[in-house]
View 1 (tube, helix red, strand yellow):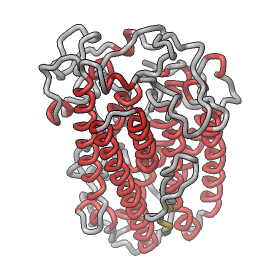
View 2 (cartoon, rainbow, N blue to C red):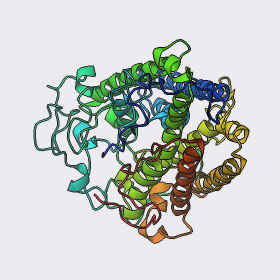
View 3 (cartoon, helix red, strand yellow):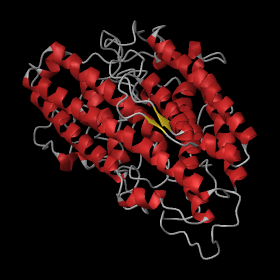
Length: 472
């Protein structure tokens, strides 16, 4: 589970099309099936819009990397970094579509064999890809790889893909992502490109002893936070061309994977057709359970636990989601926004200028959401309670975002031992996400859903106590 990919939760049926309706004519329950269809259509519309924006921004990243390869200047390196940061803005809002055998997690909608692991797996096997520096913050327990299929000769480090010219950098190489049990052999996706653009988040003198003193940033759009990979790595260095080649192959794979996921949500696609087609109350509840599973499991297990508490309680930079670029505050913000999007049936768009404001609204969606379904179903009190919890969570994760963007304290500063307290917005967000997930589970029960929509095995962290270290 090192890439923080929680297994899809079983919900009523193993396959989206496998529910039997022999015992149910759809007419005797307390839920309006037409209203459920509206929720499902809206949920699919939001997914299609967000994944479409993710494709467009990944294509823009691909072009920026091509421009940088053709003309490796500092300006073009900075432009590629900005394109990477922008590409995360829509994608981060799609994580709520996981854990339900949707196109991101499954290619055939019954097996968990989807492309998520090659798109967003983490932490990265950076020691397999390029040079790394060991120190108190990046020890052997984080950088060593127990097994891999990359072809890199031992020892790793100092050997790696970039400095081993006999290893061909192609799609077949990247297909070896996350084959090891410890999953520290991740080679592809957003974070492989991030690592090659920024490098490790070290001190400016190149040392790795950064547990007690880490760099602050100064503005929302700054590029000098995170790693400081020199331009010479892409120009005069012996292996400069291999770094360009690696990013080119990784970007092509990322775009192809995202196109496949996007197309699964298109009108007429088999998944979307099956997901939005309900005739009985049993089918309606199963589909609603899928949406709630994405919301509940992302809230508690994946985001609060795996993506936040592991790093927060242990002061581990390596366990930040976007540790090379110091963009973890946006990962948290956008993942949490995606949960709210799924509840309200809304998608505003994304921020293309990195100023904190959504400006790309061409695919904005405002659909019939869970909030309206619950009130129509006589569950106004439950709706109000969850909406208050979502608002409290938003206040908390906005605190993380403003800490990085305004106060200059990115997540790697917030998780430092000196800052681990109950007023820390990381602490407050973990608790708020925990409370939010419990209310999502209660709403499932209120609707008559008997399956678990919050994966009990999603994390070993006790998210009721954010300062408690998580089991290894």
